Image 1 (cartoon, one colour):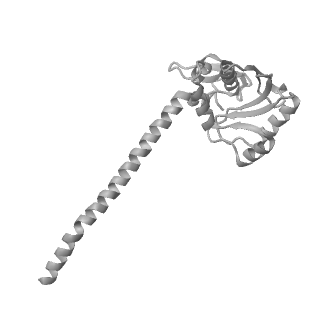
Image 2 (cartoon, helix red, strand yellow; image 1 turned 90 degrees about the horizontal axis):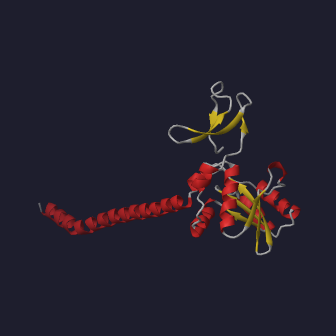
Image 3 (cartoon, one colour; image 1 turned 90 degrees about the vertical axis):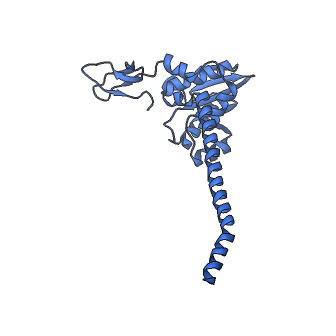
Length: 224
């Protein structure tokens, strides 16, 4: 009986400490959950303000046209180069007497931009006698691409830097406006060799549809 009493007294003595530890654990987990929720909301706000999700739905040409509009608004003279004869540069920029060659990489999210892009824009810098070489992507770069870019003094803007860059500028021309007004580049239909052009569904979704519709019903996303 005396042992039971001592055990009860011991438990009674430890109970406040146990309750305190439990409360601290619950409080820590709750504060951690709240912290991540606040962080998540801030990040979602940044994504929404930047229009990066609209960029994710663009094709390469639309992305180039958006960057042209963006830099023009910043006071650059911006020109989109001509397709297969661009020698590695998608845009030519001029600002304060300097010439900049820029390669625009609109990739699927988490598809890494490789060092090939760095090699191409470095060659374009020499071809166009430019002062600077930039690459801008809605995705991220491989480690080898970042290493080579540093050695070649090529400026890289990845997805996160692009989001911050757009938000810091707060441009009048939004990605959504470009996405809805600039026609994506036409493609060959893989089913019938017709031409894929931008179409709009009844729900307002944009997609690439075959010119031989209804004989050919092939469709695909604008962003590939």
